[in-house]
Image (tube, rainbow, N blue to C red; front, side, top):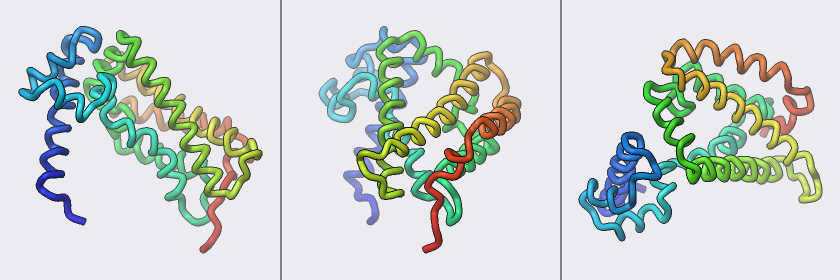
Length: 213
């Protein structure tokens, strides 16, 4: 269904507020900038900001839902004959090869990471998001395999996949904070991902293989 004019304007307003807020946070620090500052810079009321973003942290992590769902989307979209873990490895490799900003391979990512490091509320929200990612992935694996609630394997596999994802992000962040070139980091991360894959057991690598329809 095509997006209506009202929905488009709301989406554009939300994005404009978020972009302005992010700029303020990166320049002045997350703790220093208030919702009133964001509202003034965006030329909207404080209530309008809260209507779109219930918490200040939501302004910074404005694409959090996409991040929480990403691993599950990759698993649900795996190819015939492909396992859950191999699907995630394939998608991550594609993101690295594309030097994608979605995994931190972008100029200025160091400012983004430093803003998080300097703000305890953002660090707390990031940890909470990581837990959401794992819980969401576990639920997806249970659904995809038909595992019972008593079966511990979906949770264990979800933990391993999230370890892969998290370890790669930490490695990228560590290098990008040094102000390095994204293309150089990309080439190094492909090697890191290969090393990570070698550490995974066959049970993890071959869990939830999609059968032919």
